[in-house]
Amino acid sequence: MKRPPDKDKAPSALDALKHAIGTLQGLGIPGAAEEARAILRDGLGIDLLRLYRDNPPLSPDQLRRLDEILERRKKREPLQYILGFVWFCGLKLLVGKGVLIPRPETEILVEETLRRAGRQREIKILDLCTGSGAIALALAKNLPRASILATDISGEALIWAERNRRENGVENVRFAKGDLFGPAGDSVFDFITANPPYIKEERLKTLEPEVVCWEPGIALSGGADGLELAGRIIRGAAAHLERGGRLLMEIAGGTESGPLARMAGEAGLRMEALVRDLANLERVFIAEKV
Image (cartoon, rainbow, N blue to C red; front, side, top):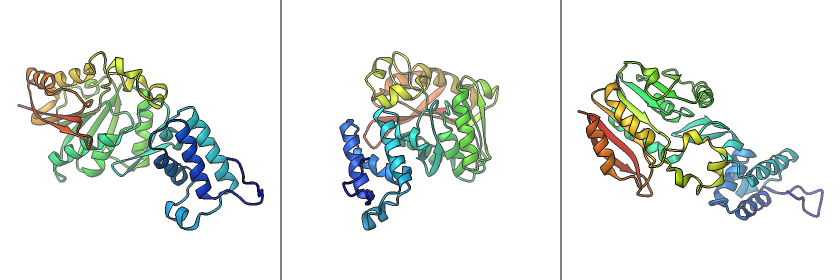
C-alpha cells in the first residue's frame, strides 16, 4: 500500500480498508467489502468498532501484512488459508493447504444432528470424510457425553484435524485414517455424519479459482453424477447403524430426492428429510435405519 504524499503520516485504517476493497473489487472477488473488513480485523488485528470510531494509523508491520495478504489474494489463494483459520459453529479451526475449508452451510448438518441427538445421551457417532474435523469437533463440543470416531482417507487432512482437536481442547473425538467405514470395523453407531465430495466433474472447472486451484481435489469431486461417494456411504451405512440410528449427509444443491430415496430404500434405510439451506437449496440428506 502506497504511503500518502506526507511521508510522516502513516495511512489510516480507513485508508487501508478502501485500498483493500478496491484491490479485491479489481480482482472480481464477490463480497469485497466484507472480505476487506475481515482482512483488517483478523489479518491486521484492528477492532472494527475502533476502526470506524478512531480511524487509527497503521503500523509499519500492519502495512507490510496488508500488502502480503493482498499479494496472495491476487493469486486467488483463499483468504482462510492466508489467515490460517476459519470460524465454524463457534470453533476456531486451523486450515491450510491440503484441507477443505469448512463452509457455513455445513453448520446445518451439525444443527440437524444436535436436534436429534439430545444433549445428555451417551451416544456413538461416526463422522466420514472428516477433513479438518469440523463436524466431529462441533458435535463433540456440544455433546460432551458422546464418543466420536472421525475418518478420512487423506493423511494430510487428518494432520489439520488433530491440530484442531488440540486447539479446541476436545477429548471425545478420535481421528483415524482409512476409506470411509474401514477404520470402524464392525462397530455400530447412533449417528453417521458425512460431508463427502459431491461436485460433478463437469462443474469443477467452472468453480472460482480459490476452489479449483487451491483446495484438494480429492475433497471436491463426486464423480460424473456427484454421488459417487454419497452412494457408497448410503449403501454401507445400515451395517454401521443401530436400529433407529440416522445417517446425515451433506449434498449438492439441486440434488433430486428420488435417487437418494431409492438408494436408501435398497440399503435398508428410510429417507426422513431433505433439509434446505438459507438459499433454499437441498443441503442435508437424512435417513433412518429401519
